[in-house]
Image (cartoon, protein in one colour):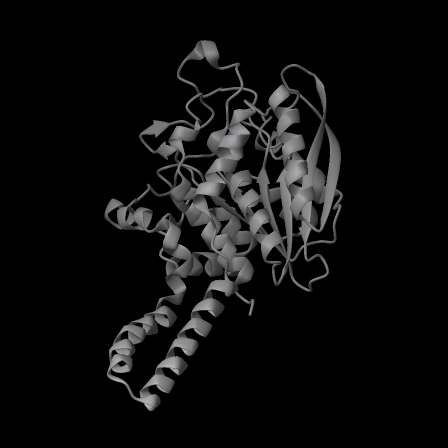
Length: 363
Ligand SMILES: [Zn+2]
């Protein structure tokens, strides 16, 4: 994540009494909107006693009920696949195992090849978009790469899902001033959004989405300079200035969504750029009982959603946590941006929301 404009308009209002049960139930989220349909399973138990008592009519009715319940249950299951939070967290750890992924580093090239491999194994089409960027401090010139994986590209409606895969070359907010020129690991700021998208990539291979989905791993998001927001988000700028795919109808960017203490209010520019999508996403989060999504408009931030709108008029929304871990401490752009400060439950909340959004119209 970028920028200095992190001062809140409203303070975070996390409700831990709501959060706790949600965390316990994270892996069952995928079935929550089906609760009403699953409930008839109770009738199987009741019917079994009747069956023991005998009677062809009752037996036939029981078979009918069981068939009915299984049909609905299987239909419910097949409509929206389950987002696997633990597998997503594995993708987060896998990226961090490469080390920092700032441009020019060993980890950067290893991670780039890993992401290309994942997209090539699962997407219908993979595109690499190269662009040049100069390191503002060293003056070194980098060739950077946006990675695009296309799913169901012929669909009438197409959604872009994006996250930045590069990590910041400096820990400029670390309390230890002697380590501020060292690159961060970027478990949350980089790996978290990519991890959720990698799990979605896997799901969409298993069950092709009913809409077109363009997965974009943006490069060059986090080489910006403090006080100059437009020095960030250079991969999305390159992408939106010269679209390598037909223009998507809408976009959702995810950034900093791995925080173990996750809180996602509505980002202010997102509300301006696509209020319809904001209402739909936060409404869906409420239906799915995802407590990280807060019904309030908070900070404005210059993230990858801004160039998408400014350069290509793609109405984009940013899902982002402004306080990592909370408003009393800061791990953002520090050496505390580590996997142990992230959580599969947090990835699961965002991943579940996106899974439902993608598959909500599937039969
Ligand atoms: Zn950042």
